[in-house]
Image 1 (cartoon, one colour):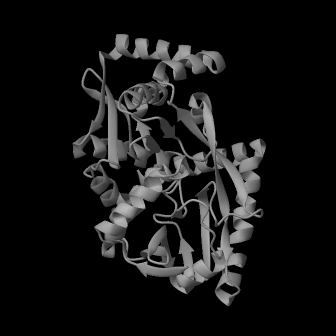
Image 2: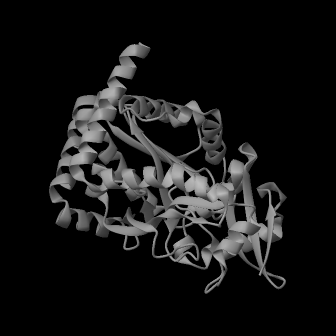
Image 3: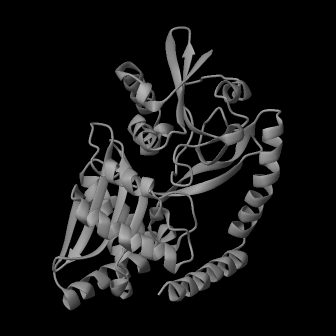
Length: 360
């Protein structure tokens, strides 16, 4: 096995075509965050992005996109934003994982959404469910499942949609639009949500805003940015921006105008998005790891992702363990305990309200 490391922009058409072929050869890799277009676009904005190209003789057998940070700390591309991470590789590939990490110039590689079936996985890594909307049997079959398992949610959402239209006007859904204006409206709602709930505002980082804008303009046969919005009487109510392969849409940035909160606009939008996505060839909407009420109400299946790290025997890896592993385990304990999670969420929202008052 031979490994070369390159900047994303240094990959030629041969390498990019091989990457797409490997990705499409295994359903486990059918996520746009594992697509070459995503890594190349992030690499245009962040100089820490690298791609390891794996060879078996003259044949390329894998691609490992990552970020290289100081002290040899490796992270997934756009770490903290992506819901699918890992190595895109040929079937039954056997590798020495620590040698790969070393060949990449890393002391440690840390991940939190590693997809299943990875050579990077071992028994020590924690596994978590990643809820999905499975549309392989069509939208009507999906809604039939909702009626069976989340009947109250489905009926209530339809009733609120009718009430919203009675109160505010005709509902319109625009799917896969390319206008940057609605995108900025959506990002404004999302920023408000981050601040209101005490979370860090991702869009305070200019590179993330530019990344989303560039992805919105990206269109290929196997990858695209997807923006969709619902309106009442031409007033934007809710929307979502994500990225897609031919058959998978990654849920990424959903948000809504809080003045319509009593109508559950997020649920109304997700049902409209699922219907149009199914009509457009999408077979799965990956909503991403995380315990959110709307995900629990809408899901009809789950994937599995892993969290952990792969490390070499080095001082940098030891320092990284002391700084990161106890924190990660504490967070996992809180997330797994409903009482602790509710308390933490309440504290964050209180902080968000106080921060908003101070800023005003």
